[in-house]
Amino acid sequence: MKNYAKTTLGNEGRTELHDLLGLTGAEISINHLPSGAGVPFVHSHRDNEEIYGILAGRGHAIIDGEQLALAAGDYLRIAPAAKRQFFAADSEGITYVCIQVKANSLGGFTAGDAVID
Amino acid sequence: MKNYAKTTLGNEGRTELHDLLGLTGAEISINHLPSGAGVPFVHSHRDNEEIYGILAGRGHAIIDGEQLALAAGDYLRIAPAAKRQFFAADSEGITYVCIQVKANSLGGFTAGDAVID
Image: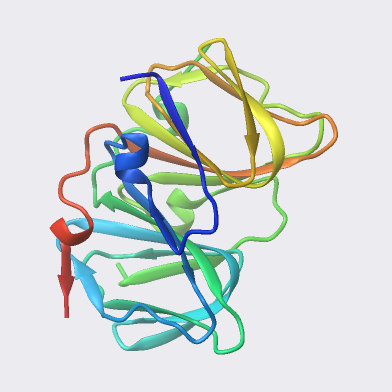
């Protein structure tokens, strides 16, 4: 495998990077919901932690029945078992990145994993 | 641990989410380099794959000696051993998310890990 892979996003509703970039430690999707739209199902995970970052727009999530307002700049960690559903605002769409990783998989990181030249 | 954690970013130069959100499968940082600035060192990783997403602005990376132009919408996977360094453009800053995960740690994902209610 090459030492890096690159892609450039357009205006797709959803782009999944795992296969596109050959990811081995995460699935990452970039998602856009137009105003008034929502993900049409509630889901949880068996093993994976999810981190959501709101890149633009507004909306809300419902997590285990609790409603949470979302706007650009918000970042969320959601535990595997939590039941979640995401919605755009009625007046504005929302763009977010969803990062799926195996819970408890990270060992060392940053200074604990990096080698400085 | 609560079923979710949330934070809202301001205009910090760098925010690290691991401790802030209690992440267990990734370290995620959101970084801003002003125009003309660059990360002051070259680094690689022992175990971790990195995924970079350019959220705003322009710049470039040097990966194993190869220069790569970067602009908003670009997403990159970089293998652990690759030597990397990031720079803003001379005329424009760059904002990017860096996602650090253990290479080969992901098992099932999306339909392979999700439970739909």
